[in-house]
Length: 221
Image 1: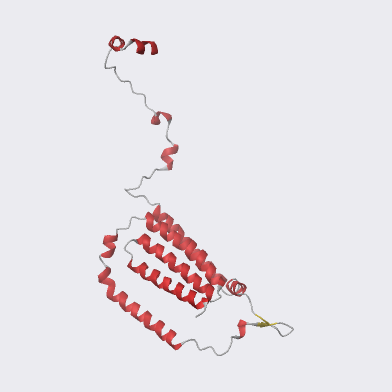
Image 2 (image 1 turned 45 degrees about the horizontal axis):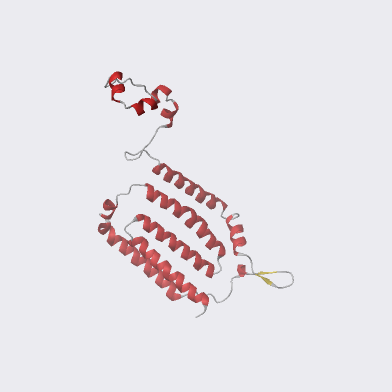
């Protein structure tokens, strides 16, 4: 077994462990952290498969932006986990059925294998001298995204923007346990509203206070 195969099994093992902990962790913050770990291991697997564009996209988009956004949303929202866990066993049969169905589909694909007998025509280019030129993955995907799939890419970016605004709106909504201050009230405040002078009557007369002071205190006074 070479180094590449060993790294693949290592990353795959950590990926499976992180994915298992995502659905078994009791704390939602820990689940999000395990999901970030799973995405990082998946990016490493993509690098081993020489898919650099997919790996860096997974790190920058999902790991660097979406997962961090999810983490802050989970930390800021007051999620009642006891109420969420009440419906676990109620929906467990449906979730188990879907999971078994997906596992059977993956097993059917993996056990059958990928029967590629010859290299696709678009995988290599031939120059004028007859030499085979391997195109860059990033350049090929970039041309494909910004030519044939430009409108779906813009729609996906708009959906992500709306999701980000909705997450910020959810975290900044007015709640009873948050110290929310209206900026308009801060602007309209006056100096008399901030400082109030109150006249307090003296508890002892000035002559009694002077009589109780020592000579040293009188010199200091």
